Length: 117
Image: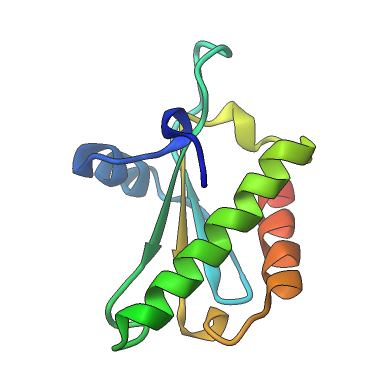
């Protein structure tokens, strides 16, 4: 589980991140990045979203969300974050194509998205 200080929670923060329109996509997962940080000491906050349009069943949506969250947590722990720590907030949006991915594939996708920023 991601620590509380790394979680993006309120609706205004999500809206502000989407408004920047800085995004990249791979393997059914889209990564939206917010504005650049002014203070380096503040942690980057991360949100994970899987829409109801992606899949009807909440179990499938929650599995994809948990998978993305765990892959990000492991990347954060290993320190292979690339330029992603320069941004205030990140949002990972899971799509239909990402539903059938296993852990290794998802880890590769998340790693690639973080390197692209």
